Length: 463
Image (tube, rainbow, N blue to C red):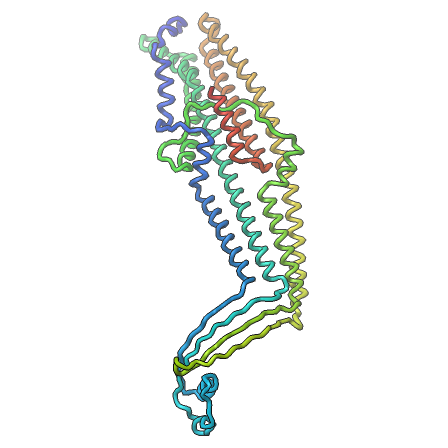
């Protein structure tokens, strides 16, 4: 196969054709958007977060309901009853203030006839002492608000984590697909040239089939990368509620190291700030309060009440009566009391164990994420050097190929190896960025401020 003929047979528009083809194969309904805007948009419309916010509002309403238990309860009742029941008639006459000597007649006592009784009453009650039950209800309701708030934070962090991982995946696959253009172009040009020689009676040899194999391998890598890009970009579009792909096609994956605090600081902040630990703390507090209430169940409860009532058969005459009092209730013997206290104590011990376990697991997760991030930085540096060396190698091979000193198989293998190193480099950059996101997530530091830091890094990489 003539080297100069191969060189001259490459159409001038070949490079433009392949560059255009690769980007036309990717989704073209693209909107430019930075990752911070994208995250905010997904957070705004996410259904899980909306549900978490609804739970927070429900917990707030329950707290107001619990607090209302300390206030007096006032109620109004009214009724009109007609009955010939002797007891009802006797009581009605008495309450209406029209009981007389004649009502003691035996016949009237046994058969008083129908009697009308119109009753209207206003009653009030207020708890005086409930052995801590109302106070527990109020505190528990406030704890539920805090728990719902922490759950809302967890949901928001999960959303940010999901968006950022897909965003970096899209960047990685886009750049990997774009890097395959040159290798695919070169391999296909060799195949086309070999086919042209075949038309002149020359049978294809090992070089032709070798070029065919490399070209197909490179094409498969490009197709796989395009598929990865399309999947990530489509998911981002759905999450953002966009009919178009909400992704900037000119963005590059950041290669610059992010600043992180020392491991000791990150671990301490994780134990202090992570929502799952805060939820466990709140659960521990609730169980402890419940234990106190259970212990106090043997104490009396005191309730004050009062009632003003009027009864009449004629609305023009309505005598009034009042009733006031204080009610005390106290269990004298409850065989289950000690068992309930034991169960509450065991739940408190379990909550302590659970909190300690989560703290320990958090320390492990932060340590692992920190090591992974530092390792990913080292790996990215190695792959950056490997990429530079592979690029030098392939450039030298291209010169040797033009000089006829190496075969087409040698140059195609060099191109394929360069493409493989590029793909590994983009994967290393992806690993570094996602390792940083993971570290921020497990240390309780992932926030919109973190997203802004990442967004700035992406903007810098674009320049």
